Image (cartoon, rainbow, N blue to C red; front, side, top):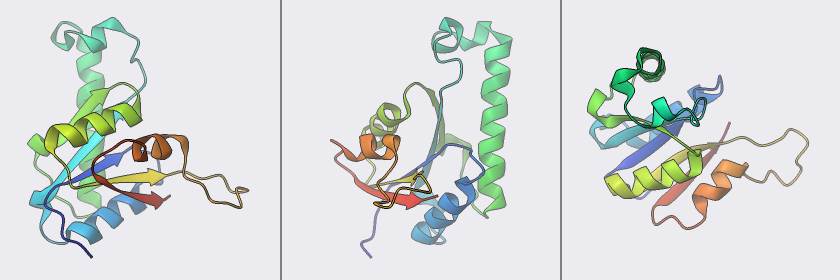
Length: 145
């Protein structure tokens, strides 16, 4: 397998995220310094307080802190100790934010989960995964979750 210097793992905190994180662990091995993790918050994304100055809204800050803790716990459960400065939270549409972050950190590989429907005999990638694949300069690994 090709060696990648910067990996971006996009997690959605669903119960199926554990298999996605395990795949990322397999790819990066013991070299977790290459791994960056992104979670995109979609709940409340239309709330102006969440999009602007979160320091003035204690509820928005609590939600952000709680989500960051959940991401860290999920990573630690899989044996990944990713420093806080490489765990990113953003608000918005997941595919756009994943592509934006991949460009921002200059990721070689983006690892995303692909939710497919049980009865989809073609096993096509989910909508977010499909949007991430379109027009991104990084390689994309879509993991069936």
